[in-house]
Image (cartoon, rainbow, N blue to C red; front, side):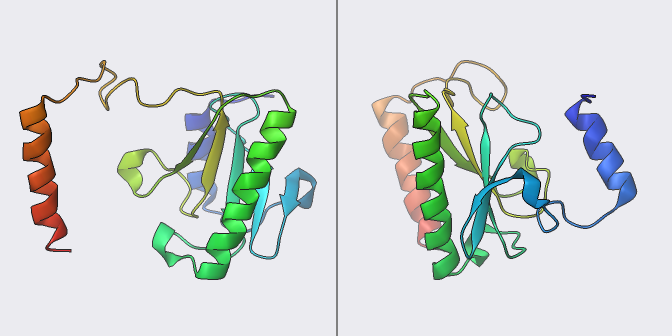
Length: 150
């Protein structure tokens, strides 16, 4: 029986159980290596939407070590090869950081979403607007200033 994702999340929050990615059932793992595994998204954006998940519970993208990073990249490559074998001609790899990006599970995970056009709309769902050359320079300067403070 299918349920809406928001209802699923409310049920998960009420149960306050362990991390779903730390307690993955092997029968839904497509493949794994020593530091990461691949599974189908439980609530996919598109058919054949794959997740790549570090085995170790990490919350933030910069908390993965070099070995985990490499293992994740290997899984991403395998996911794309798998999607091509299934007939897909494009893929978007997405990783989210922070609640405002729409992430719902506090365990770092990477999305391999086939045949999805990302970026035609802005955050409010309106068509994106192209910056003028002057705006582009102005925004670049703003970023350089902040970058110097990082």
